[in-house]
Image 1 (cartoon, one colour):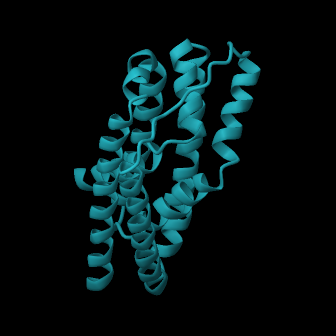
Image 2 (tube, rainbow, N blue to C red):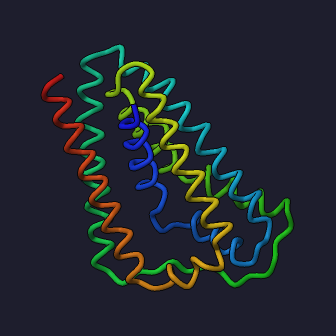
Length: 204
């Protein structure tokens, strides 16, 4: 029963750790210890709600229709291959996570910015509701909820690691080499799961 949880953790983690405005904001506030726990909690809760919607709604709908399940498997695999390629391409470049040097923000401003960088990004819905929901449809019975729990756990671990360990992580992730390694791991994870989806589509 650990397999779907681990798969969910891997996919969820791979989708979350990409360099972006949300991670930059979370890390920058973690460095300054500015409402960092509240910010991490908001990001985690938003992800959890969206993942639940995907797993319980889209996942169940797709699971009831074999044709849609097959289409979703191929579409999910294609997206994962594309995402893995993007991570692979990023690993070949010299990119690093940059955090802003602005002063402390109020709690209200921190909450507003966190919600904005989380919910105004259309990719968050593609990643959580559609992609994770589609992948969960390939997993039978209650195991799909373990997949969702794994994805949610990855979200909590990542955001609180950025917030709580911001002062330790910032010097590391300002180095391009660290992101090269991380992007390489993301690529391997995405491609491995994509191959699994294709196999399931062919045998299903």
